[in-house]
Length: 590
Image (tube, rainbow, N blue to C red; front, side, top):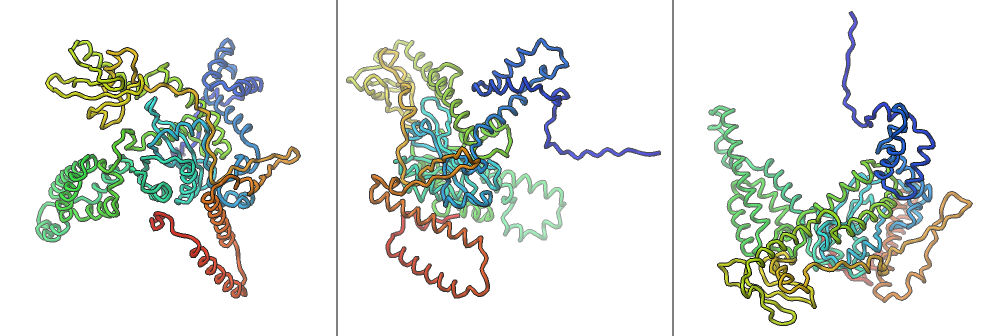
């Protein structure tokens, strides 16, 4: 008797579709959907309109089976058509990437590329914010090792995160980040705080460009996750010395019982150490932090040497605790102790806008960021700032303060608010048992700050400030919405000048038009010209290095190598004698 064997291979890399989805769509339906896409209607609007239009047809007609996938596929095709200006992705972008331009024409997939950009709208948000969050997301674009760095800031008016600058690259070192941050520094952007996920290239780039004036914050979630992982792998029930002394005794006991006891003891130790690490991270006083750190070392360096050596090497030595200890971070409210804003943004990008597809070209991705995502962001910002939809996190916080102020106002407490002068009010504490008074200051009619501990800690509105408008009706707390500067021009930059692409109608390829150096150098200070020349020299040396690595030499070229080495030594000595080391030049690079 014959048998049939069924094997499940568990491959799930295909789309599970209904039978109706496999039927071909009529061409006139595709044409109509394409026309609606060209009018910039959203996929949901198009799908709803198409379903309503063809709802009267018999159920066996393909038009009745239109779904979101149909619209998404045609929309991707439309964006691909309008964004692909050249068969070469690096020419189609419209700008030259950093590095030697000639490297982009041949073997473009094998070259390192870096391409950063931002819009005027993003610039006018970024230059007002002092706290940035920077992170990279992988599997972006069709090129090996392609990543996208994004700077996200928390908008004070809405309390939500907004992406304000992008950097595409396949170079995972600090080099493209250094160039990227130089562009911001040369526009006089000097953030107070930058949050990263303990990435060495990001840390090095920030410190080497922005210097000691910026505080680098390691994402506390990533730090705690690293600690938790190491606690599980390194913490044992007893120190290594104790285990060696008790080997003979352990052999005489029941193995299973001993393992259970060890596991229970190790779990208790991990819990105790984890609590102490959390206290270290969130301690707000520097002296108390140093005392707790010394206690932690005295307690665990001998009992748990494996974990202590790891903790000291990666989180203490070289003053690394400055990156994760709260007491060493600037006392400003940013809600950016973690990278949640930028992580959430990258998830939205890949899920909502790219539908988890990884094969999009750079020109497609740039089109999505500029022409699809930015209008969405503008619209959401407009809605939240004008309270035309669900309350933003910032508005929910302010509303809770308003409720507290209203409850206190309705008690009719005498002298709850006293006007000291035109710009100062004295507000009594909301706690009836307290005799504290707080000074609230205004700028014209805008209530600006308060001397209470809550405002001193968070540097944003407090309940005492919201009491002022209830007593004096002309005053307000919320920052007025600024609608005038969304499209202000971005200041000119020191280098990395965008190179426009001019297409030849008779050719399918576009040509990069070199920018005359005289035009680039106009109205630059001597320091800026020196910086430009330095970058040009670095680009030439980088191109030379790539050329050497990709070349082969004959066996009789030794005399040429000797001459080249001599010339390089002379060049090195000449550069050393005519330059000086930049700040943080000894910073360890990855």
